[in-house]
Image (cartoon, rainbow, N blue to C red; front, top):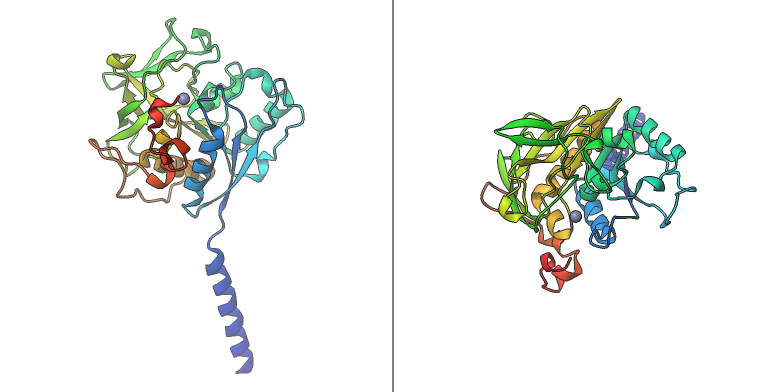
Length: 315
Ligand SMILES: [Zn+2]
């Protein structure tokens, strides 16, 4: 009897400990430390991304900040293998990552590591073949027709345009409609067919190999706002070896990132690249085909917004 009682006590104690800890969280690295210009304020947006991921209860996020250098990152060797996914809030030129660092990252992804590319991270490393295979398409930093075809949708069909032309563009930051193109993909399942995104840049003329790439969503780039008159890729999923990658062009700044659509697709995609499945429900606050929906608590991470200024005017 006494033994049974002690056994029961131990069982209760173990159960209580497990409930307090919850299920094990997936370890995610959030990489920042450099961007192509002062308008990409990674110091402001990293806390937003960290908060958005950790509030799901599914991720344990470690911020890794690459040292600020103008040449080669010789002493930077993050332990990629300690994480199930690496989220890039980071944009650097080709010369920044030496071959051993590139090789370590390629090995990590091809062995099954997950990658999330946020907005200007698709500007990075225009001449690194494996990186461009991972992101599918990218823009700026000297990208030309030699970087790969220009991918877009026309008449609801994916076009791979090999003609010469620009290697990136965007118009003014305005709200725009996002159209789902792969409704059965785990990241997209349950999302509306069309939803309005907060004021943000709409990247266009992106070029790249598109290796193993699935375009999950597009947005129409309005010619009245320097647009291409085409539906441009906005959310992409690719594979690299055994690794999964997700690429969102959304998220120029806090305003764009405070969109519930940005947050939810980031949360779901991070789970997908890390585990291959998505268990998160789509919140009822998700934007609709006619209305934007944003998180005031996240928008308040921008000092301009907190002071009542519209950061659309403050590049
Ligand atoms: Zn931007």
